[in-house]
Length: 193
Image 1 (cartoon, helix red, strand yellow):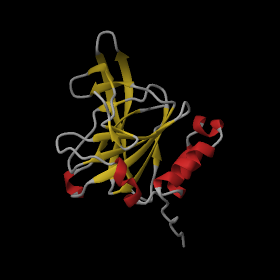
Image 2: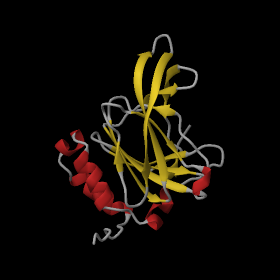
Image 3: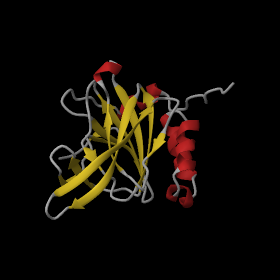
Image 4: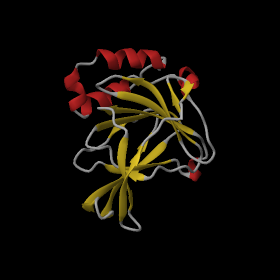
């Protein structure tokens, strides 16, 4: 019988991330397993959570030159754009609720012309017992909090290295373009405009 790890306060996760050797951030599985083995107490995230009924929120918890850690708050039915992570590694854990990650294969991209072609690959469920990592071979994906799940969700994202732009895609229209990323809060305080 497998026993789930005991949840820890978010600061324990931050301390653990800051102690990991740089080489771990260049691999996929060790950090995914670290997140799965270090679940976070939902109550400890409260200072970092903001909710918006129109759009999910991005809330920066910790940032070093090696990684950034954020909490994303998802109301029922909210969906991210299909996007990439600028060739950076990304790991995701869900301490509250559950979410779907829909992965895509990028068949063709011409960023200058704003055109692309994507094919659906697979869908993975994330929940408190199952963290996941973005596949660098096929890093294009979107995150979904389906209405049928009938609950808010919070996901923790670790990006290595930090980045502030990404490419978003419309699989239906075959278009793509670069966007600037922003945070709703940084270190528990409202982000400046």
